[in-house]
Image (cartoon, rainbow, N blue to C red; front, side, top):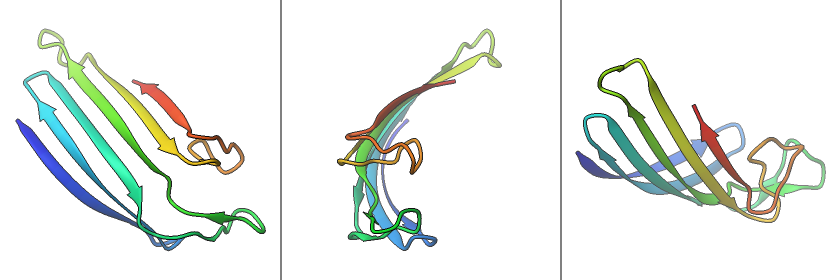
Length: 106
């Protein structure tokens, strides 16, 4: 199975909006997907920091999930994320990074 999606995210607590689109492909024991995100709202005063403005970061991710047919309870997931900006809060507001990225597994 394969598919295309688009989405709109709204963060009511911060009044921010972002959009995105993605691709997905899956087989019996494997699922691959990728998404792209872009900010639709402008800069706004941050509730976390004084004299600081924020907006959603643009970026993308790619994911792979799979399991073995002989052991369906044994599965794995790998995700890579990349967001663009000079001060991206991917790991929290106290750890701002330029063009933040992460590799996650589980």
